[in-house]
Image (cartoon, rainbow, N blue to C red; front, side, top):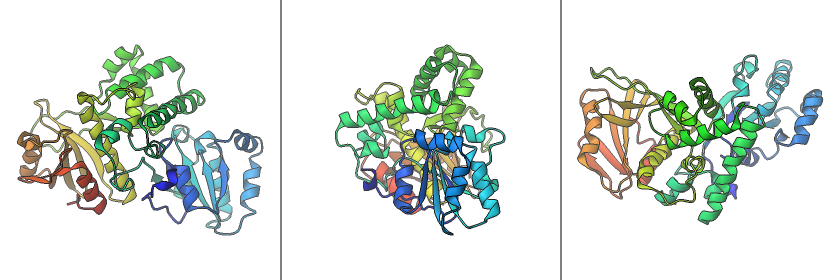
Length: 388
């Protein structure tokens, strides 16, 4: 069913890493793109144990292949030392083979001494489905409730979507956390995960989270790093354009999918609450931006901007010394006060382009601020029309 969705990420013609959260469709994508590749699936225990006992088996199989052959290694984080074998083959026979290396966690690969092929492989990221891949055929409430993991989007009924998401979250805790011995106390991590979900898209106060989860502050910092390393969350730093106002410096933390957020907070079987909508819509737009920055090589970095007096812009996209401000509102009406911070920074010269994104149906213009319904903003982003 995952093959129903066309994926927009163009794969390189040379060796590459493809990292993405569990359940985003990495294996399915490569299976379609590289149907004749030789596969080493490390998620299968038999394959993993065989290679752990006999690492030479990998080299022997690879070197029997023809020049130009693709070799796919799935779930590389389960055996990072296999990268040493790949590097050795690349050194002995440069450009003879092409490796596609898939991972759903960077935790083990970031440890000291792990061979990352000395820059010989391109890095690519994979995300849940974006609006373009869905054909823009979705109800906004469904997007906010269940997210866009391919296996979730492929289900017709709410009950089946919920079952898939609950299984996804259980598998994450079991396979990425428990089996990899990422934490000493699984109960503490599970409590933290729920609190992190509740605070998704908000400024992160590590000390307060530590109190609520009843764990030490350094432990909470380590837990957040696990979420980042296992690719289910990302930090959004504060932007400081130095416009002679005091600006907030604390980062925000976002999960990679709104359905996963509702899953870790135990809300999947509840109706969508009004106080959830704004945070979840921000999560959708942020990850849409992250995906297109990667897929289209737009480049740049994402931030948010806020002052203690209440001025705020949800996202600031900085690229080529230019900045694009994006404000998100989950309502069906856009009020002029929503544009206030965007106008202020546009007038100061800190922003070159301004957008509002909302759940209404009409394109609007409020001075320098272009206001688009969610689907229209997604289309503009995919077409490159958001860029200055």
